[in-house]
Structure formats: C-alpha cells, structure tokens
Amino acid sequence: MLQTSRSGSLKARCPRLLLETALARAVDLSKAAGSDGLIPVSIRWHEGLIDAVEPVPDAEGLVLPRLVEPHAHLDKAFSWNDYPNPVGTFAAALAANFKEHQTRTLQKVQARGERALALAWRHGLRAVRSHIDSLGPGAACSWEALTALRERWRDRLELQLVALVPVEHWATPEGAQLAGTVAAAGGALGGFIQPPCRGRNERQGLRRLLELANQHGCLVDLHIDEASSHPAAGMHQLLRTMERMELSVPVTCSHASSLALLRDGALRRLADRMARQNLQVVALPLTNGWLLGRQGDTTPLRRPLAPIRQLQNAGVRVAVGGDNVQDPWFPGGQLDPLALMAMSLPLAQLAPWDDHGLKPFCTDAAQLMGLAWDGVLRNGAPADLIHLPQGGWPELLAIPSARRVLAGGQWVDNQFVGDQSVADSTDSP
Image (cartoon, rainbow, N blue to C red; front, side, top):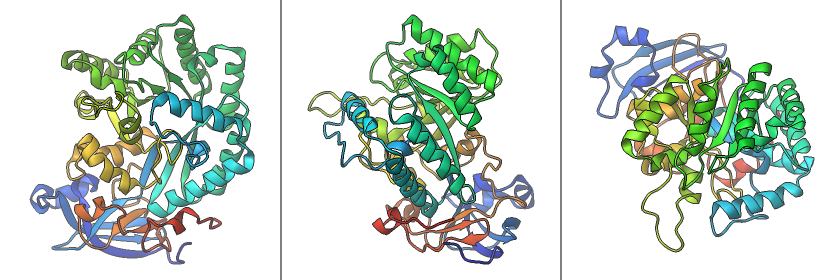
C-alpha cells in the first residue's frame, strides 16, 4: 500500500558515489564524507521526482536509491520444500529442478511470482530480471504467468524476462520459433553453457543465439561457466564466437564462476578480451558459494566465484544478484537487496562504503539491466529511495534491516520488513 502524497523531504547520509557531479562541484565530497564515505544531504521531491539534493551540516540515518535484482528465477521460487536438495550439489539441484518443472501449472507459477514480487516491492527493489525455464512442459505456463505478472506490477517495479534453454536449442527450427515468440513478448534470449564446452552443436547453438538476438534486437543473458572445473571454457567459446561477428545488442554473462580458477595472468588476459567485447557479468555469490567447489565431506579451500574486482579492474561492468529464492538451487533468499549486500560482504569481500563494492548493487547493476535511471540521486530522478532512519552501514548490513521504502514519491506502508507477513502479501496494484 502507498500513502497518498507524492511530495516530501528527508535528511540522511548518502554514499558519495550516488550523488550528482553538480553537487560535487558545490562541496568537496572527499572532505565532507566521513570514514564511512557518507555525505549528509537534504533530499526534496515533488510529484514523484527529486527536485533538490543539497548538502547539510549533519544528518542521521542512511539513504540509497531503490535497488535492482539483475538475476532471479521466479518460475521456480519457493519450491525447496517440495523439491529439496539437501546434499547441495549442482547435479542434485538439476535433477530436482527437472522434477519440479514437470509439475508446473499456471496457478503455481502465478502464486510464486506474486509472492516473490511482493517481497521485492516491500524490500525496496525497483526492477527484477528473471530467467524462465523455456523448454519442456512447464515452459508455456511459466511465460504466461510471468508476462501477466509483469503487466500487473508494472506501475510498481519493472520485470524483465529471459528465455533459459540449452544453448544448442537455438540452432534448431524450434529455437528460431522460440526467439520470435520471446521477442514479441518483449523478452531476452539466454541459455546455459556447460563444461567442457567443446561440442560442435554447442558452438553452432551459441552463434545462432547471437544471430537471433541481433535479428530481433533482443539482449542476451547467458548462464556460463557455473562450474568447479574447466576454467572459463564457456567464456573462451563465447569470445571466439563474438570476435568473428558484429553484435548490436548487449551480452551479459551470468555466473562466470570458474574464471576464479584461472591463473592470474590468464585471468587478466581473458578479462581484457571481455572488456574489448563489452561483455557484462552478473556475479551470484550466494548460489555459487552454496553449490560449487564441493569435495565430499571436506570444506572447500578454493571457491568458484566470479572474480569481481579483477573484472572491474579490466573495465568489465559487474553486477551482483541473488539468483535463487528458496528452490533446489539455494534454500535461502527472499529478494532483499540489503540482505544480499550483507551476505556478499564476507563471501566476495565487497564493502559498500567503497565505490567498487557499491556499484555492483547500484549504478552498474542498473546500467547492466538497461534501466532509464542509473540510481544517482539528482534533480529530475525518480523519487525512489530506501531510507534507514537510524544508523549507518552496520545497521544496513544487519539481517533483517529496518527500512522505509519510497516509490514514486510515496512511502510504501511498511515500517519494518523481514518477517513472514511480507512474504504472504498480495496487495493489488
């Protein structure tokens, strides 16, 4: 529920990264920021748009833009209880996912998607990109349910949809037909590439996927190198293919986990090639930290996880996503961007008070998703904010964290999130 007024103001501290350069000229942000990188500001909005961001001597609390989720799977969300994966392996997750897919109905996916988007809304997300299992008996009902939910929720958040199939499928007549259907639905083309990535059919499928994306003007988002072996095997295939053709659409590589297993020099060279091709990466530390690198009953000593800082240093845009929500691939998750930020702190050593640690959740994530607003607080930007009335980074990184959410200049009627009542919310738009 929203309050009625679309105008208002607040004072809080904002990360230096998220303030307009015009404000930087008015005040030396490097001196105004404390050791936590936060700048005290006053933010005013009218008719749903920010019309003033001004420095103030002091302020309490912390403010961020409403955030984004660049990689989710709403079609299978909340299915762990019926299709668990207690051993936590990739193979067991795939087997459970296959069983679940056989039982999907329109009603099941509608209920899952509604519950997930209610959580996203209450937690302060303004956009979600969801991949959809697009081959098999549950594909049609999943697309029907989620395209309907995209329309139902469009005034509150943006839902992007990506077709997920084996990459070889795109080289078939059925794959070409699917591409046309997805493009007509305003979706994106995706696929998964499994190691060792040496097959002729896989190479043909990858090339055909990129050709179809060019033809239809669809962005591409791949599941690639989500593995504990064959380091960067899929990325090498993708780069070889891209370097032999011209692309007019952005290409995103989700997971890219096995790149962490490369030696330093090989990783630097690969990252440079990725940057030259304008590849983007979505790192998924929660699911990959749970599934990958398992070695029997021992604690893994080397974890496959997208090498975020090395990629950033090479000029590759990187976002961080939550991936799965209580399904066979990961038993946790609740589309909470602040909880994701908190859990990524130890897993990926991403400190949000550092620009490189904050960008994957804010500006770079928004740009990767092609959103109209990058999340910088400037005059004319949407009045879409997450406000923590008290404290700073430690309070934000607490799970759950108390927050208020401003959407379109109106406060969401939600003083504290993180309990089960949020998950069961089905308020109408």
